[in-house]
Length: 121
Image: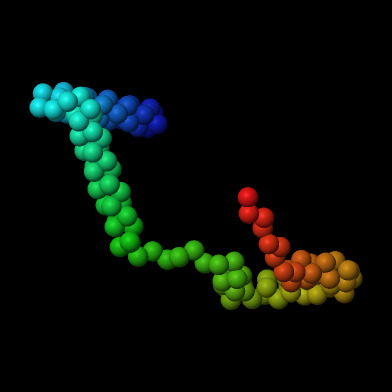
């Protein structure tokens, strides 16, 4: 139901914008040529779009939110909050390394290999 109301609101807003553009064009056409009236309508809407974009940009700059933690920070936070689980996980990884050293060598090589340069097209 909320989606239908939002769609109706968006459609009504679009109709209002179109009606305003047509009214502005008709008003400007009384005083200038058709091409100039169309240019004025475009200029008015470009200015309105620029003002809305500037407001959104400035609104985002003044919000003080925490940045998303990196994966390393997440792991360190988990290790601090749940040390026993972290110790068990480390012991499990060590046991896996002892039982299958080739797998650990492959994992280490994957993490330590230099990144391949990407082709620019």
